[in-house]
Length: 472
Image 1 (cartoon, rainbow, N blue to C red):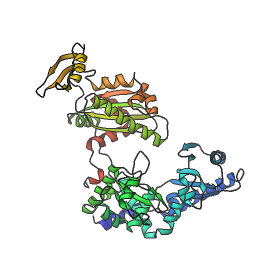
Image 2: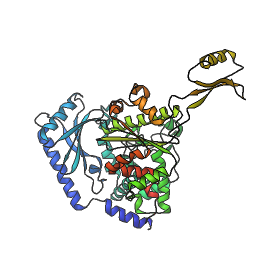
Image 3: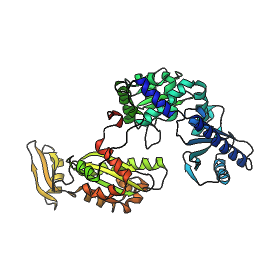
Image 4: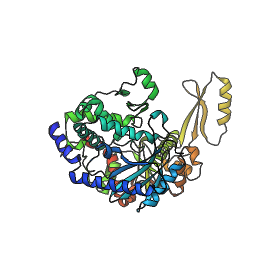
């Protein structure tokens, strides 16, 4: 397929139909009317308006997300934001969930639309920001002012591309490209193809400063220290790409170059996970010659960003625990449905290590340290051999290990120690009494019970990015 034919097909699928637009407009109007009418009972000065991709007309077909902002006068006390949220609860007739970022906001679903209602302050000057979300109306206005109809289509292509290669979303779970970042990139390069052509040769630390707020690249990199720096045109103190990880920037760079070599729909609409039977999955797992330790436990009941932050922290801490006890970790990963279950994966080079381990001591030329070392081990019940002097003139002792099996190490530490001292996140640590450890093929039962986790584990084993797979 040619680049043009691919983009033509993609845009046809990503662009909202007239019917979708009409339904979206109807839903937005109904929500705004309900909120405006209800809030008038308690507040006299406020505005209710739609923000985000709906307001900027950069939303995608089948998108069902609506961002509604309630703008309050700048002099409004912050404590009244909670009162606004409580008032909203009284006027909507569907179940809601209260979330917290810098301050509370509300989520609910209505007619298959996911709605977020966010209170903020109406500021005329960004130097007078009272909360981070006060910038959002400025972002909306900037994008609406500068995007042409053609560039809006290019934004849709970029959102579809980043979503297809798995790097769309600034939330901690993803660490990718936000919608606003996509819009600014299209503006900066005047189109999707121009962006991809340039991005294919980006280096880490690449700078985009649309309004040339800064003239010194060195100082700018010191200020932000990020894999990609995109200066917010409406607030030069902010890097719009701050959430983007080095890994995801690298994926984007690689995929941009590959798209021109082999343009295909897979970059936008990845193929489904290959269908493998449980026996095929276990066989593929065994063929690696490594060993798998799975740690499964209930998902902590916290908001997504907190959950993922705790999981990343905990996986890193457990990897450190394993490796500090000489269990070499080949690769780690984790999966969660964010509601009921978390599964951490530690792929080990060996699940069992020898009972004996060698510890190096000081050289004999440092007698002040020699005495301490030899006296510590000379009659120690854990000493198997030594202390003795090796070919390099150092004291050596061979001692018993505390653990020779990885699962025993984890079990001992997870069910009896101070888990936060190990480095586990607070909410993850609270779920450890219910945790289960599976070694290698013991995971078969969980694979049989959970199709979504099975799909995830198949992708773990295959690992090849779907956008790199050739069309069948």
